[in-house]
Image 1 (cartoon, rainbow, N blue to C red):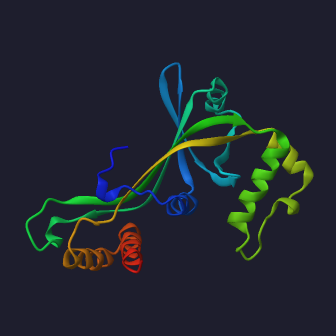
Image 2 (cartoon, rainbow, N blue to C red):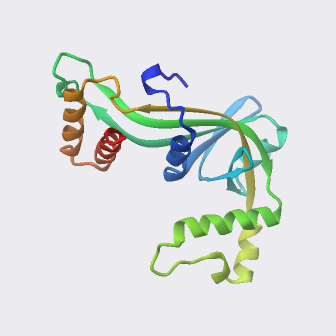
Image 3 (spheres, rainbow, N blue to C red):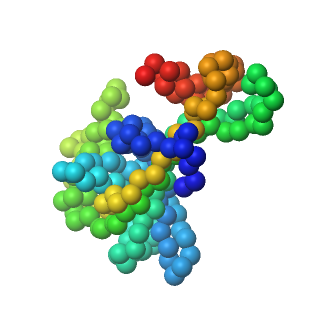
Length: 205
């Protein structure tokens, strides 16, 4: 990923926080030389000094079969992003786009049934635990779970390389930076509001 020095993110904890908070990623592999992709919710786990991504495909999605060839897997995650107007600067500039993006490369393997159950249990815990009536693994009937497990294929990816770009107007002066935050808040859309909050939070560090 092309990343100018101003925007290159290197702090691993911060990078993985972006992945965890924007966990609906895009997994890319190749089939007979053709890139193919699926959009999936993915988990992150650290074991010892290694990081792993995990998730599952529908059995009918043949992309899971490409994981068995041992080739590199490419996964993309995207955080908040927003258009930045050139009218928001003190001096003449061109417009741009602020964003957070993380690229992950690694080797994948298929999960055994017990590993898949553990992964699905953790996923339900993450997304259900704060709901009024959480539906966790042990609340679902064995018959339903057995049927659904036959329809999916779990996988994990051992992370070998991470690239991250956080383009948050770091190269702008203080006046422009604060003005961009205010203008984003006035845009009235979720992406702009998220970017404004991200930029404001960065100022507190």
